[in-house]
Amino acid sequence: MSRFSFISHPVIQLHDFIPGIMPGIEKLVTVHYDPAQSIILGMLTEKKNKSYTTRSLDINEILPSLTRLMDDKNPYSWYNRQNLPFEVETRGMNPTLNIFSELQNIVLLIRVPDSKKEMNDLIFLYLNENPSNFGVTNSINPLTTDNKSIIAFLLNNTIRSYIRMQQNDMEALKKNNKRTKHIIQQADQLKDQINRTADNYGESLVKLCQHLVQEYAANTGRKITLTPSALTKIKSFQGDIRELETIVHEAIAYAEGLMIDESEHIEVSEWHIVTEHLPGLEESHGKEAEPQEDKYSRTVMLLDKLENAALVVKNKRLKMTGTNVGAACEVPISAPAISDALFNHKSKIKSLITMHPHKWDILKKEFRPVQNILKK
Image 1 (cartoon, one colour):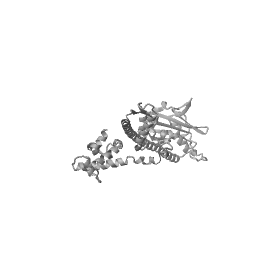
Image 2: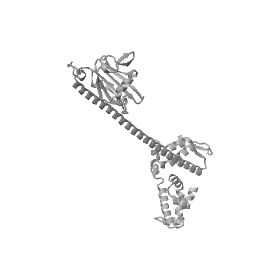
Image 3: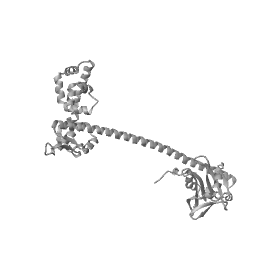
Image 4: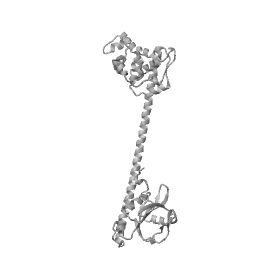
C-alpha cells in the first residue's frame, strides 16, 4: 500500500532524495535524533554496482565525537576525509564508523536543526573532487573554494527547504487527521441520536399496535397477543403509520382463520404480519383501497370541530355540555347529533388519540361524551 513520503523522518527521506538530485554521489551518511525512539540513529547510502543501497549504521563507538558536531552552530562545513572523526567500514552485515581512518574524497557536512530545535541532525555528502557530481563530466579540475561555497550554499538551502516542506506536510496531515476524527465523532454521535430516535419511534409503534390488539380482543372476546418476533417486525416498520391498523387487523384475521377451535388463544407472529404490498393486492381491492389514505380524515375533522367549540365554551366559562358545545360550532348541531357522531367514530377516535396523545386536550379532559368513549 502506498504511503506519504513525509510519514518517515525527513532526514531518512534524504537517502532517496539526494541521489536523485546528485547522480553519481559516492556516499551519504546521516545522523539524526529520532523522537519516537528517543535515540540518535545513523544511516548509510552508498553506490555499488551502479545502484544505491541504504542500511542502518552503527554509531555507538563515535557518538561523543558526533555529538560535538551536532552541537556546532555552523550551517555547513567542508572536510577532507582525513579530518573526519570516522570512516565507514563494513564488517559482516552491519557497517560501522571507525575513528581517524584514511579518507580520500571531500565531504560536505550540512547541519539541520532537529524537530525540537535542541541540536542539529547531520548530513554528510561524499563528493568527488571534480564537478562530475553536478553534470560536468569533461572537467577534471578540482573544485575551487568559490565552487565549494556555491555548492554548499545551494545544497544547504535545498536540503533545508526539502526538510521544511516535509515537516509542513506532516503538520498539515496531523491537522487534517484531527479534523477528520472530529467529523467522524460528530457523525457517530448523530448516528447514535438517529438510532435512539428510531428506537423511540419503534416503541411508539409497538404501543399503538398493542392498543389495537387489545381493542380487537375486547370487541371479540378472544385472547390475542403479539409474539416477540411480531413486536420486532412492528418496531422496524417504515411505512405509513396510517396503514398500521389495517395491517394489524389483517394479521389478526389471518392468524384467527388458521385456528380450528374458536376459544383457542390467538398468537400473532411475525409471519402473520404483511407490511409490504403483495402483488395483485391493489387490483383485487379495486376502488376500495383508494380511501385508505383518508380513513381518519372525517374523524379528525369531527374532533377538531368539537375541540374548537369546546374551547369557545371554556373561554365563556359555560358548562361543558353537549348542548353548549353543539351551539358553539360554526354550524350549530344538537347534543344527540354529537353523541351519534361520536358513537359512529368511537373506534377511530381511540386510535387517533393513541397516535396523537397531545391533541384534543379539552375533549379528553373535560367533555364527558369523549371521556366515556376512552374509558370503554
